[in-house]
Length: 390
Image (cartoon, rainbow, N blue to C red):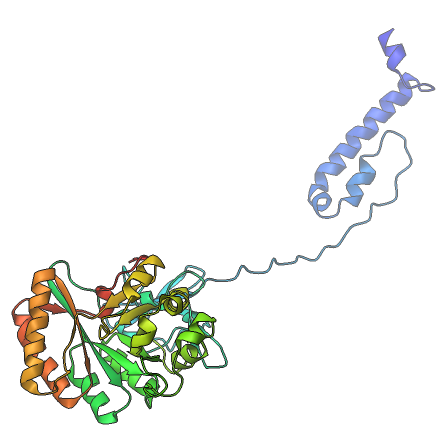
């Protein structure tokens, strides 16, 4: 009875047997054409039609071109000095290879790192990093990189060794006298920080020479003194009034004169350093760009330290001017005083100018002080830095 219910209407058993035979034949054919069925698909659709149904028209075959997905943008090429004198190159796609130098690196983005630090390798310290610069009407200005690195991080000098008595010496006025600048760059030990006057000459050439010799750099920006404009540090002075109004054209002019520096140091500026209404936006601008501020310590009325700490701006202040009296004996006495301050506090900062006698005195003292356990460190090593990083 069940067979009668499920038997197709109008068909007898003979027809059903023929249909079964037809199916077995199609199965054999299908096995032989399995490879073709995978590629085409239309023949298989005909063979698999229901019993005695008229064959369907071949299904249309869509021809689809293989479209490669666009390659993901590569990260910057990382270049690290290798012990053999060449470099290790890690491309953005993770491929690592060795090279004798950078000539074989074909890339628009190269970061040179010192192991364990954000600092540039000394081998490439004279080269400005594009990621830390932005274009302006005043030239290329320092700025934080997109990944958060600051000029203060990348252009910092060699870090201090653990422990010990540390002294930072900043020699300013470089770029004004070509002879004095050459002597400072060549004769002072690498730990001495060099400050370039914005009004100097051939600053890019001297910057490269100083960085090749291991020096950390500062920019000296003209700032308003008491008695201005009768007493003036020169053209492009950053005034109290302009800073209060948020106008930093003078500062930006100075910044555009040099690259590869970790911060700004005042040139004159006693009036400016005594006014918190001017200092707050000024130091905020430096902090925004990833720079420190060094107060030369010449004004007892300065409030720069308090404003810098309140605004989380990297900051340092000098303990002593070394060459107010430019005689060799007077400078030697000041250097001895600086050493006593350092032994009492653990650290000390002195500032001086690039006079021949000053340079010779500092170079001579530095050799003797090293033998007494004094370490000369760059200014960034002794600065207050609320964003301290490795």
